[in-house]
Image (cartoon, rainbow, N blue to C red; front, top):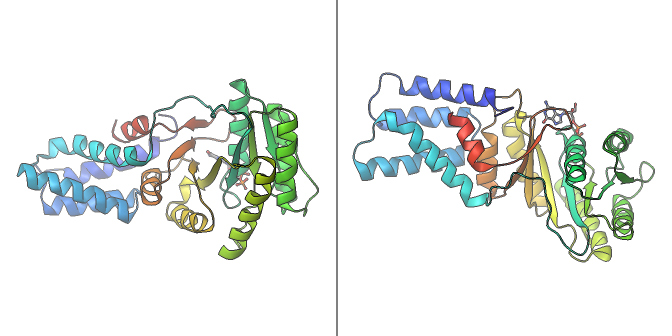
Length: 301
Ligand code: GDP
């Protein structure tokens, strides 16, 4: 699978070393496995869950050979991922409804928010949807410019105001324009400052409240974008954003060129939020609909 090579090589290499010369799964090996999982950025809490499940199987079956370990880890990780990630969609799609489907995109600067919005706009447009972008990150001139570049490249509408204007006002305009033009999808960017929790919360709450005036149940999805290559930082950001607003989906970027792809498993499990997309490069096509089965398989194959 494109983009996950380093994660896989690193993981299988460590797993191989832990298992080398051993025929059965014992406490020593479980300790080593714990290290392998933690150092693959799966996160401590999720690692403990996985280890406990393997331990239960060892206790139940009395004996577990190391040749079965791959299969069992794969089953347990797939099981964890299935608890939160339903479905196996491979297409870029949004629910059909009477009003535009509104996705509000949150995340700190630099994680790949703008790029992800651009890639999504491209995919939705390709799927025949009418897309409107909203330049709600009004604090950085560069953010609005970058989004405009993507809008031009992909060929979709963008609603923006001058720098420094109220993000809630941009959100309002964007939704009005989307409704007037009978758009299918709105992708609304937001400011990526993680100043302090209360400010972040107030800002996002205000943007959401204003949206409701145009489309009562908007946003339909609050997508948090995280940079997968930052490992534990991504966990920390997930913690802060989920405390500030109700995050309903995740996009995890920059999984190409990193060995830290385990964050996808850990963050999804720990925060119980489905992963909707993964970013595997800088190009327009380098976004994939997250498929839990393929993802787990790509770890082990
Ligand atoms: P923003 O500040 O969150 O809007 O971040 P940008 O969208 O501007 O992205 C920051 C940098 O990360 C840019 O150089 C992007 O090309 C790059 N980037 C975004 N997504 C990916 C990805 O999936 N893989 C790689 N390798 N780079 C990415």
